[in-house]
Image (cartoon, rainbow, N blue to C red; front, side, top):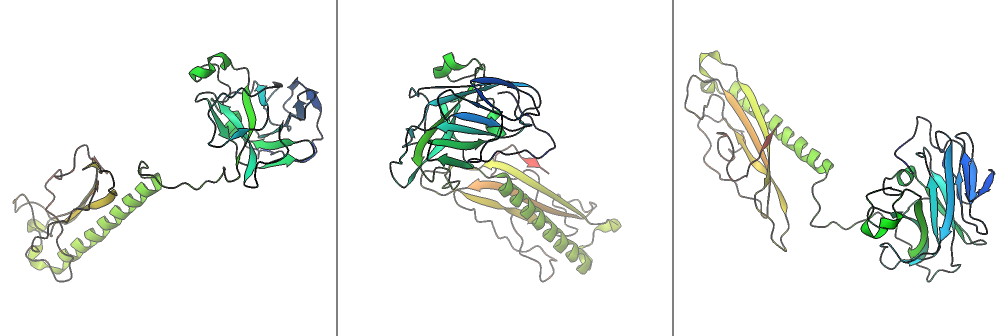
Length: 338
């Protein structure tokens, strides 16, 4: 199999269990892009069905089977239920195909087990389950599974280099491997218990940024409200108030210890009163500084609560943290300001 492919047309997906009214070949065939075909193994129900448009141009296809020798990692409790199908094709796939593999078992070990087609990831030497539409023909024992293009075009399906050391002799680009394994019937469940090694997802980071920006807008609006209500807080020389904000994202301030839950700390946020210059220059223009630092701590820090600055009108929120005089303390570099 080769690299990615596809077009603007909606992919046609073959249906498991439906009669394949297509030309049938045994062993190998050369198929044109506008043709559908089934290529099977002699004396077996194992066959691969490709509909018209599966490949962009003429493609050479070959199938064969061999006994499973026990190689490759599998899911816990999995047992082999078929021979290994080797499927070779020399062009990228634009549509899914239907892989039918004759199984070696007619009865499940228990009602809580089922059969699933797997493909061999040759880069990791791991049998990967294919979750999706499938159907077992009870009369022939053939399991038909829709194999998506993400598997067919994966660089790990049929590489000519970069294979796991155990597959050094099977790394010549001569075909991808498929097999059926029997395992727990909920093997394709997507639910996963969260682990401590998981990091913030992109959605969580976006939520943090949106929340911080909302805080910036609120504090900026309150500061502007203060400037319009407090006459003695205006800047000298008729300077117009401005809003300055920064989002500072730092690394973890402390590594979590075993047994402690890591919590997210947003803060501190600092609001400078209109007309107040922390550097003492009375000629400076008014600045409303709003800063939020994002960090990680085992326990959320308790911000200091100094008295409210003089001139703060009633109804303003309490003063949080310390004036923003540059890089915050307590958070390691680097910082990323937006």
